[in-house]
Image 1: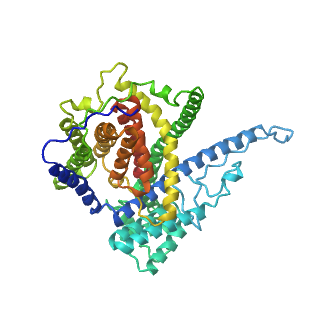
Image 2: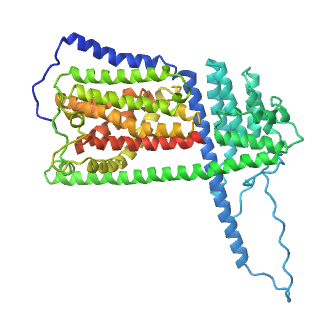
Image 3: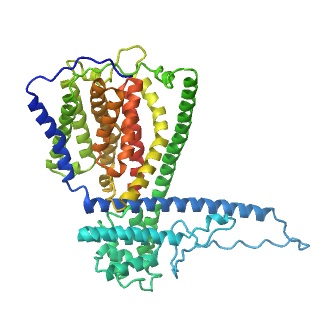
Length: 563
């Protein structure tokens, strides 16, 4: 697969100037990124909110699954009762009148308040398998809340204002999942440590009261009247997520006797459950089935390769024969060219980011800013391929167009679907290995944030979410593949061969994402994009694979952030 060596063509003009421009363009963007405010307590806070919202989603799934199990168990019990023989009285006795339906109540530590909306029984339904109820959910909830509070305390130790909001989010989450005693205990610990309690936190803690006439479980809660007034403020619980905010508001309204408001809040929770749980289940099934198919494909390739090797053939010749493969590099064979092209593209992204930061108005702080920067990156990538392509069009230089027989962007894109399935189990394994490794050598390492996580937490409108989806799934894959595979990989391939070019381009792709804990998965991802590009000979294959991966990640983040 190594291309035929060609004569190296140096860049025209003074070489010292090109070296200086390349160095400045490669180093300056990373210096500015490292010096930004995306890390530190803000990153910890966003990570904390995502953990809370993930627990919200799991709570929704557990409630939905529990309701399904209880319904099935009740139906089974009713069927068994209908089939059981009744004792004969010797005469036709009148059937007893059915008892009036009662509304189940949720009782936790003396809570006698009625549940409004879908009931959640405090005891397991009959005929539920014992293994489903042996898990100590209260202990798991306590451990999770203490871990979240520990992270909130770390944030408070660096930034008191942000730490207060983090503690508020943890306490509100405890109330939202009905862990009232734990919420009160954590609030008392926070007060003893001298950490701040916000007004929203004090209002949420009012929900720990076991009943309307009983005081809250902690002295640091606001009076119920003040809590109800606070819960009606537009900005109440802005960072808690829709589930947490609605659960706290429903709890406070129920304790205050405002049952219409409580019922409306519960309806919002149920609507969220009806959307989030099926979507999460669909994504999980899609990814799970894809991973199973991928494992089968990997086993097939290994078995087919072993058979070919036994027959005296190269292991992957049968796979390479399906496509014409990647043609010779169109770029000048100068070692400085890859660095200069990458520097040009990075500086284009830097200019786009600075432009977004200088534009007035709050709208471009969300999804539209990501779209604008991604589109600017595409234009910068096209400019790089046009400038260094020795007169060839960017489409031909980057292998977006190929007139060779049998080459088709559509055919290559369908091959990327198989590559995506094969990549899934490999990425799962790489993520597990990476997590285990970093947990051993750096257990206190700051969490990594996906670039769009903070924006998704803002609960933007449909325009922001749609713009972000277009940027992440379409614009970003096109721009990044144009540069990393269409330009960088092809130019390095002509200089050093396939293997060296593959790992250098993959390393550059991994380093660009600046996620040390995920360095191995990103490295594998970059290598997979280059391999499918080399196999099919069409950049559309790596663009499709990149878009599939980004789309699955964005779907998961959207479900979590909107919950």
